[in-house]
Image (cartoon, rainbow, N blue to C red; front, side, top):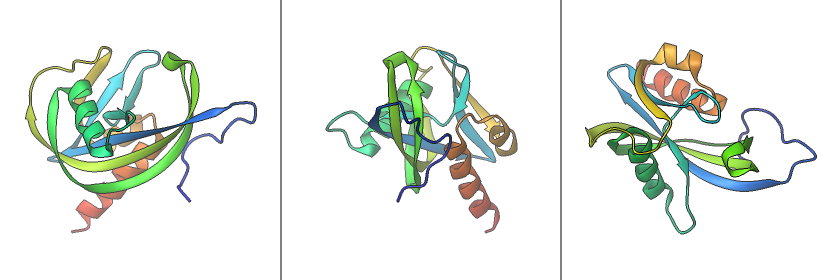
Length: 150
């Protein structure tokens, strides 16, 4: 059973399962977040949907590059969770299966190519306060606690 974060599914909704891959990118006590301003302003881990026939890691690298302009080095799997969400830009209700991977920044190629995305490096405590998705925050807390206990 995959752990759920966020609201329970609505009885009247028909949910399409949508897998996604997300990067938890830490560097020197800061985490990289993106803010997407359309349709709502949300701070989140960079990443997104896995296209048909695409592997989770290929999707992760593609989405991180589109949303941040960065190439990353994946260091491991952190957490898989699900959440139920309304995705207005696609006019659909989704059961998002979120695969979160730990990563390190490799190099920046340029600005984000995806519109309406802003990238920021934030101190972990601040990031935890402003993250829009409780599953993303749980993954960050898990990695942050583990790193600090060494």
